[in-house]
Every structure is written in C-alpha cells, then in structure tokens.
Length: 122
Length: 315
Image (cartoon, rainbow over all chains, first blue to last red):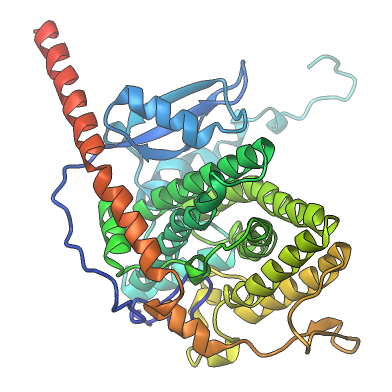
C-alpha cells in the first residue's frame, strides 16, 4: 500500500512544494555523537523510568544534556543514561509466544482461590 | 503473512486504539507520513526559536527576559523530543538537520514572518502557540507511540507559552494609547498567518483521508481552524481589541463563528520560500550550525581521548 498522502495538515507540508530559493548544502561528512537513552527517577523511592533519548559525545555530556532537556521543571532527582546501542529489546513478532503462556496460569493470581468470607487477614 | 494480512492486522490495531511502536510492522506510507510530519514539527520548533530570540536582548524588563529565555529553551527541548521520535522511524538526526539546512525540509510557515515590536511576542504566544496547542492536544492521541508521548510532554510545557503571551498583551491593552496601538497592530499582523497554520481547506483534498484512517490525525484542518476562531473570538473581548476580519460574526445556527476568506496565494507563496523571512531564517540556522561545527568535533575528540586513556589504564 503506497498511497501517497496528498492532504496537507499543519506540520505536514509536501516535499514537492520545495523551496527553490535556498542555498543548497551537501550532507556534511562530520562524524556524529552517539544516541543515549535517558531514565529519570522522579522522586526518592520510585524507579527510574524511561524519558526519551538524546545525542551526546560522552556520558558526562549525556547527563548534562538530559538535565537540560528532560528536567527543566523538577521532573526528577536522579538521572541514568545508557548508550542506545547497549539496549536489547524483545521482538514484537514473538510477543504471542513470549507472553501468552502466562495467560492460562490463572492459579498464579490470589483471586483464583475461593475462600470463605469469614477468613480474616488473608 | 502476506502484505495484505499485515495491513489488515495493522489497521485492526489502529481501530482498537493500540499504539504503534517503532519495532512493529507498519505500512511504508505510514512510516513516511509520520517521519515527514514529525520532522517538520521538530524543524518548526527549532526555527520557531528565531523570531523570539530576536527579542531576548530587547525585552522590556528582567522578568520578561527571563520568561522569554525559558520559552525559547522550551522550544529547543520540544525540537529535541521530536527529533528523537522521528529517529525511531529509521532516519538519522544528521539527515534531518541537513534537510532543514538545505531548504529541502519544511517547517511551519508562520515562522517566516517577522516580529516587529514587543507586542509581537504577546501575539505569537497567544495566537501562534494557541493554534499550535490545538493541533498538539489532538496529537497527544496520535497512533504512533513515540510521537504521542513526545506530544504529551510538550503539551504540559506549552500552556505556559500561551498564557504568558495573552498576559503580555493584557498588560499592553491596559497601557498608554501607544501601547494599545502596538497591541492591536501585532494582533492585526499575526491573525491571518495564524489561521494559515492549520493548512489548506479540507475541500482542497482530493484523496481519501488516509491520515485520519490511520489516526495520525483525528481532526481535519477546517475543524481545528474553526475551534481556534471560536476560542480567539471570545478571548479577544478581554483585551478590548478586535480581529482584523470584517466577516467575523457569530452564527447562531451553526453555533460557530463565521470568518472571512484566507489569502491562499500568500499561504503558498510563503510555503514556497517567498515569505518575508524565509531566507533570513535558513541563513541563521546555517550560520549557527557552521559556527558550532568545531564544538561538535572538539567534544567528540575529547570523548575519544578520554576513552583511550581509560583503556590504557585498564590494560
């Protein structure tokens, strides 16, 4: 399905309406900063949670940039950064095989057990 | 699975309001549309810093200056959230930046208009950010997960932008005759370009609306524009100012405001690069990028040097 989307919304101006007046610039051969994932602990006692990503030359700069980009309004008290290439993810195509077997093991949940109402503190 | 089955499964997910994530299968056109939209949105945030940056050194008080710096810093942050979201679709940051700098990629045309007086800072916050917020609130529910999450964060931060803009105008509207005139003139300048921000009329489109079917968008240009007109036509009463449209009138039957025809020739002209500030904006971005080249290179060289030192120590 390669339907070209011809309806132009705000923020979606077609490439066809190219600006012919601008100076053309070729892609720079500059080497680039790696990508980092940012995790924020919003308050003491809670887990670090994924907030987003950013580019930085090293870990120190990644933390500095994460502070500027993701915690301008006291969103956190602690930051973790990890280079994105070190994150491995499960494959969405395997989701069924991976997670489905748990769904027929209802006995793993406390509500599976039918107990008398008189039983207290359980 | 055949392409047809994959497409069906994809549409079923969308219909069930299940978000699409980067590693999920998606039609190529869905990926491309999102990529174009998110990157244009990111570019808009970045270029959007320029008309306001123009007033940081000339803000009328330290308070206004601090507010403006915070707002411009937010725009930079919003650009970064959006570039990150776009990168999950398989393009690189450098490619997007190059496309912006070469003029290949587009950004919202509104930023190709100049900010002539301090009152323009108010009008930009109130009208331009107001229009952007309507679009962005809708996009919080867009079907592509990373885009929706970036939008939620942006919307949380954006409401201060609009409020400070209105307040800037409110203060001017209670000032001297000269300040009141400045306020009205800024509104006159920004009203029509703000309406253009929502894009061409729905009737201009001949294609079936794939973006709506895929829930990338949930409201049409005309719906959003009408929401905006209804909102602003009421808010302006508090300023004691007027909108520069003689056809603006409440329509009791429709329960909406009627408004005049937009100058579409101007709209396409600015999109095509002939607006008042297109060249200036791109030149400013290119200059900043070029002058920052040595900083990017130095940071990388420093990181490399430190890594080598650590390796030697460990050996």
